[in-house]
Amino acid sequence: MIDIKTRTADCVTNTPAGNVVAVNVQGAVNELDTKKVKVSGDTMTGVLTQNGANLAGSAYQSQSFQNLLKNGDFESWSAGASAVPDAWVELSDVNTAKESTIVKYGSASLKVVSGSAGGGGRVFIERRLDADWLLITKNRTLSVGVWIYANDSDIARISLESDGTGGINNLSPFHNGNGAWQFLSVTSVIPNDIIYLNVNLYNIGTNKIVYFDGAILVEGSTVPAFTPRPLYDDGKTIQIDSTINKVTHGGLVIQNQTPQVLTGAGAVDVTSLYTHLITAGVGDALTLVDGVEGQTKTILTKTETTGGDTSVLTPTSFANGSTITFDAVGDVAQLLYSNGAWHYIGGFGGVIA
Image (cartoon, rainbow, N blue to C red; front, side):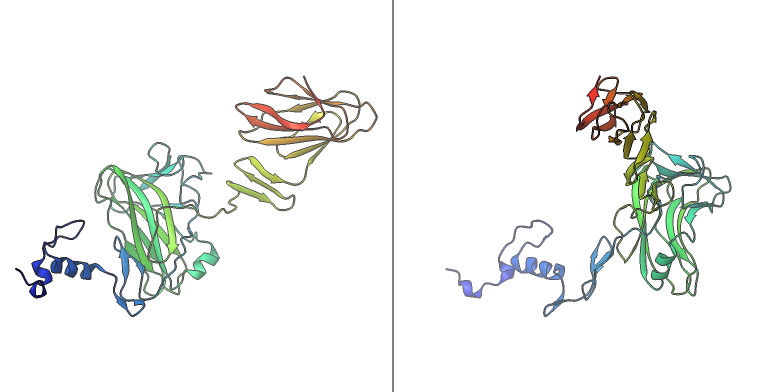
């Protein structure tokens, strides 16, 4: 008979499983002890990390992942597809272009072709952080991450650079050139007397091509994969006219509280959400050109100048017929433009023919 009281944990066998490799219970306990979170009473000590990046220290840390970069997804190219993306500046012996095939996010990425000189090509954002963002980044920890695609090793990487006392230019590792997207990042403490802050995108090869997409700059020591910057009015993507309460996106009217007022015959516009009709006679001829996919339009007879007046709308493309006749005050038609034509989706009164 074996006296169990004299047996120790190192005498009891353990079948290795998961990440525990010990073959006895005491060894397994020792392994688990080295892998547990260190605590002192109810407080965690040391630094909790994930993939080499700090998640939290001796006290809980919260981090905002608001992207500080404009056009980090390289979707805005107001100067043209063979120029430089909006908010970015070209430097040294490189050529930039909009890429529509090798893309990580959205419909475009940044294509950077290095010149024959090699060794210094980069695209960077310089003094482009909004003034308020630049102010609050002083003496803070910032992290930048960018998705990179390259077929050659040791030519593509990024850096975070600033001026000021103890100015920095901290570099990420190189892309390994495996012909796939890789997310590279770097973390830096920003000097408190900076005037500019650059995110540098390097292609230091000779006659080589590198693609960049999904650039993100956040406060803190952890950088997530790309998320777009909050909406801002760059005069191209989002257009805001506060004088008439009008907001457009890509030419599509999102909100416009000022209606078009159309008296008699004429063109119903596609720049306002609403058109109010004031009749001038019988059979006022109205036209409506094609809109853009997903656009809506509401047309209402507001005033009938003389009893019996009518307005006849003839859209360029109408899925439900040829015309809509408005013959009484309060007649309204709501239209949706889709698949190359206006569709009647609701209303009151009026006659479709």
